[in-house]
Length: 149
Image 1 (cartoon, rainbow, N blue to C red):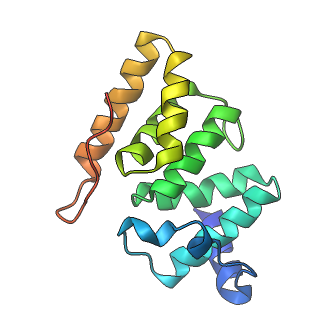
Image 2 (image 1 turned 90 degrees about the vertical axis):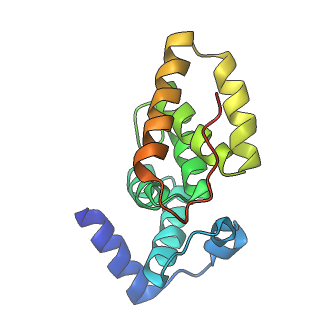
């Protein structure tokens, strides 16, 4: 969390040269992001682009927890490839599943491919985690669909 305060301070002080938030359609999901969160996304994407995966992971994670399908997709990719986290097919499936359930098309494609490489036990665990996340994270305004089976 201390790193996110630093990221937030850096983003607020300097701003990001590019508005990746708009370019990648992060705001199109219907989730409300304040200016600080928007800057955290922009800065995290820049870190990702510069292969500073550990710090990028932290920024994306905070916004993914809020429900951003774009950030959930990035976390799925990062867990799949071991960028900023240990390579973990279960966690990758979990994040792709959440993003796909919110309509992220690339996440759905990755989810389908990843599922073919996983054991039934791994898939079952990832689905259990996604259902639990949806159950405990959903608000009255949440438009997310159920995770995919």
